[in-house]
Length: 161
Length: 67
Image 1 (tube, rainbow over the protein chains, first blue to last red):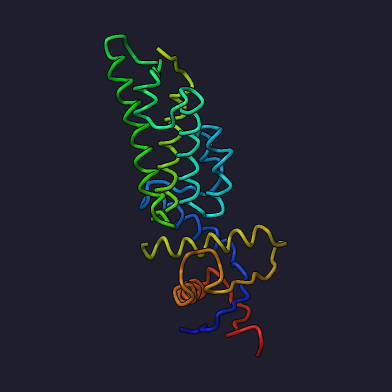
Image 2 (image 1 turned 180 degrees about the vertical axis):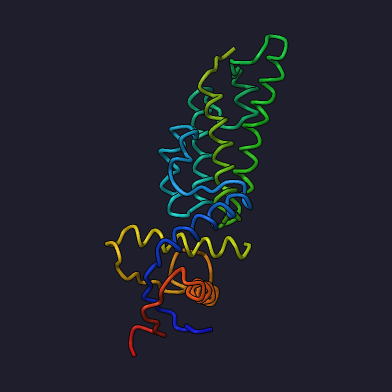
């Protein structure tokens, strides 16, 4: 190995550098499915999650970003029903999510939404028991944020029955 | 993390730094202190590989700030 010091003064050699970067970028995307490199990937995340979690995500505080997104969902449930857990909101709170694809599957749709909120409760509970929440992968964190985003979007179209 | 991903992470840091610097400027890279999540030895190995392949030119290389 020619260079063994910790401090490097480097000049990228163009066009080789750009070509190599492009090659590794495309390989990396293929390997990992997708790469979250900037905020454009957050375009499809619910704006409230984006506002409250993006800065944490960008600073690589993935566990904190995910936990905060769960709290945003719980806050919304509390505002809508005065209960903050999925089971209570849909049970005692009589929350009903509108937007099922047909009347005959409305019950299935609401059950699915309820289980999604309950899954978020459980994930939040599980993750709040450790300091690092075992989330150090940006893609896994993004997937959790997408889950919270879906929950929040569903809660935008609701009624109390 | 696969080797390809590790190399990509180092390249990403270099690209970011180069975009923030004037064209043709020399970039500082401190192995073990960058945000690549890799350890210093891995980063040094990758930088050597990139230098061998003439992707980067190493203008100078030091063990520390105080020599």
